[in-house]
Image 1 (cartoon, rainbow, N blue to C red):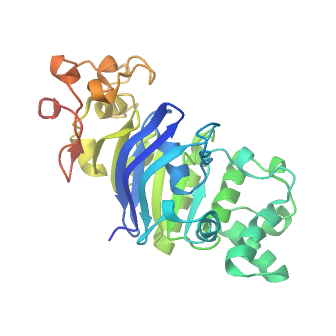
Image 2 (tube, rainbow, N blue to C red):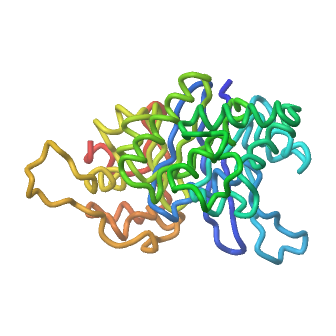
Length: 324
């Protein structure tokens, strides 16, 4: 049994469906990625798994999310848990590193208190024992002079150090599943490499499963075992990382790969960006949502809803063989 099994996940805000039947799984000690442009449904998928989306009111009004499907973690459907049951699991069994550390950390609470709060709730540590463990966590994620940093506030730290604090909070209770939502956004290249190396070391040391959410295929190539490519709220391709990079079978995946600078190409070789924007879509029921941006589009692409085919290497494209 997979550690996390997401089945037919659907998320809607009002009349707008942002995730439309997404399914994937994460095994023990595995690194799985959700890849795609901003607006494809990656982050909202992770927030639904963590139980952090605002609830839809019974009246159906307001800004809440309508969530359906299943997210089975260690045999238990997270969507069936009460708010209190989910709070007991969140932080202990599954944890998340959020995209923007400056807005994720409380600006008026010292770093030390934000870490010890997790230790008190889930590990029962108090006083000096909690403070000592918080100091050890900061040292573990590579923050210098951790004892002094415990008394500082988020604005006193650099972007890379704030991201390390978020990671320290997330791994404080040795969760079995860690979700990292764009953990290197807005960081310079050297700090990005350090953060990714830190996550990799933590996964290797603890045997933690990692769900990596990113639009950076370079990150995927260096860390992930399995890749799920999302477009307009659906998985359009899914396979092992090595196979996906060697034999992409969906035009969107090909476009993402073609947008990456490569060292093995001539220096003046132009990149091949995907034309249009994520807003240029059609309804999945009318055909492939990527059709308005696809260079290979034909009549068969808009002749009905494309289904996800295959197992080891799944794709949602009627021209997959031609692309391969």
